[in-house]
Amino acid sequence: MREKVIVTHPIPAEGLKALSERFDVIYPARRAPFSHEELKAMLPDCDAVLACGPMPRDLIEAAPRLRIISNFGAGYDRVDVDAADECGVIVTNIPDVTAESTAELAFALMLNVRRRIPELDALLRTDKPENVFGMGKHMAHNLAGATLGIVGMGRIGRRLADMARAFGMTILYHNRTRLPEALERGARLCTLDELLSGSDVVSLNCPLTPETRGLIGAREIALMKPGAIIVNTSRGGTIDYDALIAALETGRLAGAGLDVFPDEPHVPARLLALRTTVLTPHVGTNTHEARRAMAEACAECIIDVLEGRTPKNIVNRSLKKKA
Image (cartoon, rainbow, N blue to C red; front, side, top):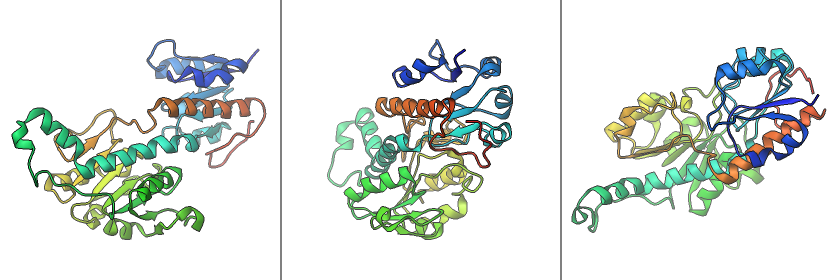
């Protein structure tokens, strides 16, 4: 009997071809993902899960045959890794193939906020043109010559730094460890406080962990330059959004580009009311190219484990190997 693999959400099927050739793949027949109850009913005879959503303890414990949870993304905070450790289940992520599209979105948010593009687009569509056009109206700021502070200089942060350098920006970064000089490429390691006080744009590109939850709160926002902007494509929990909204409402911060929110899919009404915010619905990797590559990378991890090899990008803290 072939091993059974559950894919929790409808992702690009063409990226799962190698998986389907080897194993029995259970894929949502409709466009909606499997519900929690559906997953719990299917998991007892499951060998692998390609997880695009939460994998809490009760689902993991319902799957005695489970050998791997292949997480569809770089961030794996929705997988109970502790429960997986206790059950001897390998958890993997796919940081390599998510970097380009997420960095692109972070850069797009930064550019759109800095040049006020969505705000001006809306004005042209809703106001009289003679009120919108005019010398000296709607002044904005260049990226060239500005300083970008990157919190989390992993693959996404480094790719964002590459894009910013091409636009003539100076790069500061805050990271758990210093990068090798060849990867820094002129970026300067700073404490978080130094980065916040020295940056015109602050971009959060760190995973959500106990250490980064609430990393940017009222104290940290008070350290930022008046008129600075903040970009978040990591997780909503890394920022105190009440403190951020207050700084935006008073004009102390000039704007924010946000792809993630603390209580998704809900977005605070006060954010929606601000013209100085550019908001997207958690679409950092939502490109055709990225999603296919993500499916292929997740499939590769599952194939490795079920065929007895050690997969790339194991995230378990204390692994009990079942591969």
